[in-house]
Image (cartoon, rainbow, N blue to C red):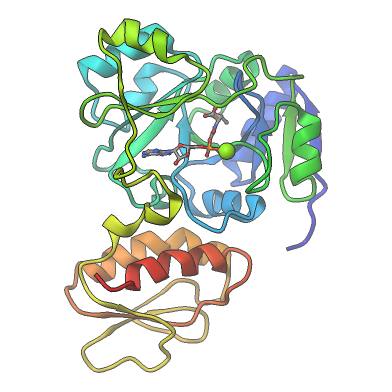
Length: 314
Ligand code: TXA
Ligand code: MG
């Protein structure tokens, strides 16, 4: 990948508008929140979201938190509940992410949810983050703005030292107030603490009137390696295929063309953006799926990780 000349933008209204414009164009922009700096992309743009995984060098497609400016904006994407209303009123804007059931026609990239039927949402409180989200006017997917396996950034300098040359810009508004990621509360059934963070458990317990359940080792998202096992296609999947059998559908890549092609030009970013949608589309046809070889470098590592899970014996 060609290095980018990463812009460091002091957080003033003009630069916030510039950052919003960059997000609209599909570029990656790091921005401050009260917890840590986030690496933002338009959550509706599959290629932009794929760039997040490429820039962070994440070997797996973990689901991402979507940032919105208000509770009303959040309700556009998920099935809301009385419980959600209660905690959102108490803690939004603020360092709390809520996991709720995804609505149909949500319009988000499948990479944001990693193919799950739930979505993590957050309304940040940091003024620059709020201004950016309002100016942009759409959902922003943002993991912490650090390379995979490194410590989360709480200053623009941290962001530059980890991701300089890999992202378009960072909005610099000084150090983060909380300095610790958001608390993640699962609300798809009984309240469950999915990650401790900026909102203390005691405060959540007060508002919920009951202590949220702790995550157990049986939960699907506990270890990244277990995450996708429930979301494998119904049909059998065979990898590294250049010549499919008569009964198989072929998911192509590059010159190996098929019923669908992850990226006819062999672009791994485009392939990542198409991965979940193409798997879903082929699976709906109810025939075994063969998949063309995908090079195992860059985003190809995460793509192959997901494909290996899909092909694992069940
Ligand atoms: O404070 C924060 O939350 C920061 C700032 C930038 O907002 N973001 C952040 O994102 O920490 P990230 O990607 O580093 O962590 C997201 C976590 C992951 O552990 C992921 O597994 C979990 O959220 N997550 C996302 N979607 C989920 C879902 N649908 N169900 C369960 N967990 C989910
Ligand atoms: Mg992180």
